[in-house]
Length: 243
Ligand code: F6R
Image (cartoon, rainbow, N blue to C red; front, side, top):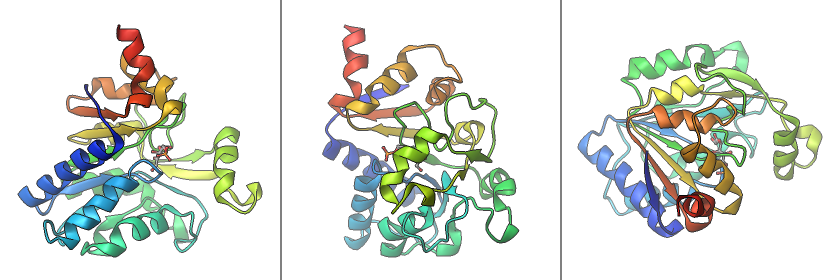
């Protein structure tokens, strides 16, 4: 695993430029996208590059990591809403080529999500954030390393964490759909970004300890092409332990 420690601004720039370069080399590329606070700065720079006519998303396909079960796409906490409002609505991507796992209308599209990704040619670059407990996508500690896209019952701690985004805790969905750890490992390249002190323990365990299902992100040690981008705060514990 390659580790790059830089400022948030530098990381947003480096990651967005890598994506722009990939699209300009292969305009039919497949992007694996994440939601959450971490990738917002990258999406802002991608929108800017589109407005500056440095890149076009016309032929790009995307697959998102996860989605809540039971939220309408128009709900302002759905991950579809997040992606539309932070990226898709502002660039020329064909919305039909943007995929978010779902079991809406009993379509159960999540059951064939991995197959769909494979048939599209596989993810060229997967963008990831990391939970403070080491989760990637909604794969919480204890998730088997060989999981594919699946339904997850949200842990009480995650429901409590996410309650701040809803008007009451009762409104937080109890389930989500998530790409599995194996789905993520199938990406050709993985870029994980971590900002802030509350990620430092997860970053330390992910990079310094043996891979373990207790820390889902540690599976990335077995991936041949991963870059971890951390700001100074997120890398502090790791760096102190290397001294
Ligand atoms: C989002 C996702 C999650 C987040 C993680 C970090 O699609 O899959 O694993 O990446 O919870 O969230 P933030 O970026 O809000 O700290």
